[in-house]
Image 1 (cartoon, helix red, strand yellow):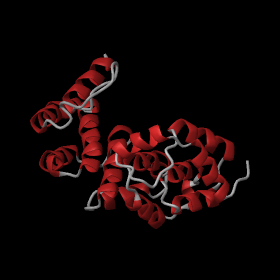
Image 2 (cartoon, rainbow, N blue to C red; image 1 turned 90 degrees about the vertical axis):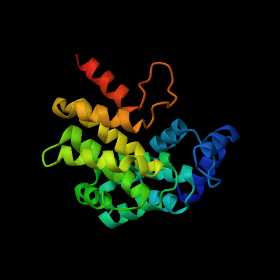
Image 3 (cartoon, one colour; image 1 turned 180 degrees about the vertical axis):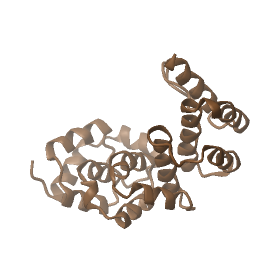
Image 4 (cartoon, rainbow, N blue to C red; image 1 turned 90 degrees about the horizontal axis):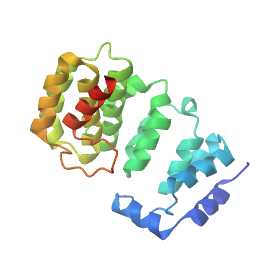
Length: 223
C-alpha cells in the first residue's frame, strides 16, 4: 500500500482511543500521541510494508504512535550509526525505546560500536540501549565480555541509575545468572542486596523481573 505522511497520520488518528491515550500517559508517553493500540500499529505497518522515506517523516513528527509505526517501516541498514544514535537519544517514551532497540538497533551493522559508546554515556535512553545490547551479547556472543567486571558495575551503579537504565541493567544481571553457573551465586546475591523490582507487580503466569526470582525460574526450566 502506497501512503504519504498525511495519510498515515490520518489513519493513526482514526485508530486512536481515549483509553489507550490514558494508559500511555500513565506510562510516561505525554500528550503527543493518538493512543493507538500496538496491535493496530503492527497491522497498519503490514499494510504499508517497508517504506524508509515515509518512516523518516513519521519519526520526525515526534508523535509516539507515528514513531512506533516508523520503527516497523525503517530499513536499519540505510541508517548511519550517527542517525541511530540521534534517534535513540531523542526518545522520550520507553515503549518507543524498546521497539527501536528490538527492530532497528539490534539489526544495525554498527551496533557493537554503538554499544560501547552508550555504555559510557549519561543519556538515559542511550544507556538503556547500551545495556540492552550488552544483555544480548551475554546470551548470544559473550566472548570478550568481562562478566565479573560487569557485575561489579551493576552492583555499584544500578541502584542509582535512572529507571530507564535500571530495566536493561537488570536484564543483563539476570542473563549473567541464568547462562553462567560460575557467576550465578554472585548475580543472585547482587539482585537480593539491591532489591530492585522485588515488589514489581506481575500478571498471573508471568515471571517477576526481580533478578533472583527470574534467574531461579529460568534455571529451573532448563532442567
